[in-house]
Image (cartoon, rainbow, N blue to C red; front, side, top):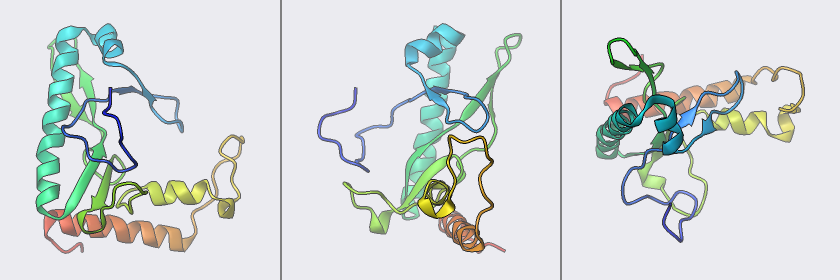
Length: 168
């Protein structure tokens, strides 16, 4: 359980493992319990997945913090080879599409944080301005140039802060 008194953007004392399962295409992944993970893959593998996830997050969080960015959370995906027992980190890792990056200089618990991630696109798609109803059978509208440009700008800013290199 999470501690009492948390507000939007609160920092936890330590990182936690919050597993999820893949959802249908276009839907959000479904949060599941650790017991659900154990039921799916067994106790040993569930423990390894938790340990690997927290090691990846902890190492990345330290690097981001040293560069003035808060790694609020991230999603990692693993594959498992039942024959060899190998666990493989797959898909994208620590990108603005799989992580929430916040500028440490403007961090203010208790309110929504400006972010270097795809939330800006999500917010626009769910706004009245987009005119799109996610529950409809229609595909989302094309993103306006300003939404694309602002999203790109945030991604580039995150890249430059995290790597210390100019994006070219």
